Length: 113
Length: 113
Image (cartoon, rainbow over all chains, first blue to last red; front, side, top):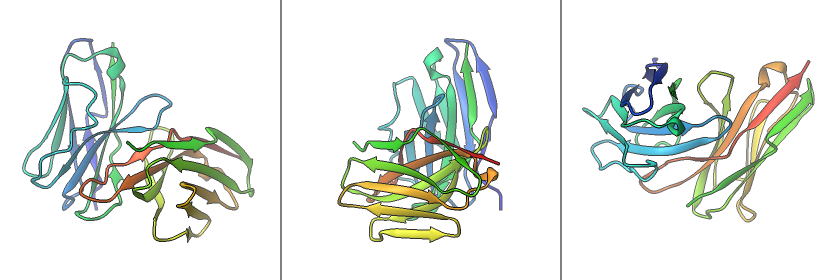
């Protein structure tokens, strides 16, 4: 079946602009995660959604970052007033309820100039 | 919070040799330890995982071992092939209601023909 998809694959934006990144999880997966991968670094947890429960936002680095998940499926990560340090690959993962295995999308490479 | 250390950061082996990557974790509550393989420009792919109730798991040429007392786990790849060349990430997570992963910084494995 179809895997996790993300769009856009690449995004170049000017410092100070807002960006929206989209994630479509695997159909039927109720858990959705956002991670950030900076150059040469491991993946850093940002936010977690599980069904209709309140999201775990503990990994968001600042209040410029927010995310929502509509209808328990598609998720959008929004970064306001982008800074150069926001440049990274933003990865989304999903999993079945109660399962530990997370399946990743291809990521969105964000470059802030 | 959890902290995962991964070593070495780079590893070069000859085709047919074995490769070992080691990780340590800090939080004794962690009970799930996946390994991901990421080829250049691609998404991370889950290759094997282990739960804290077992000490070893094998899948063809790859195996993972876990020492809960010492809080470390390792990935073993035998009979390496050039297509094993990639960045490998270890991760750890706790149970409960949030399965967010804490990742190591990755190991770049190069298998020379």
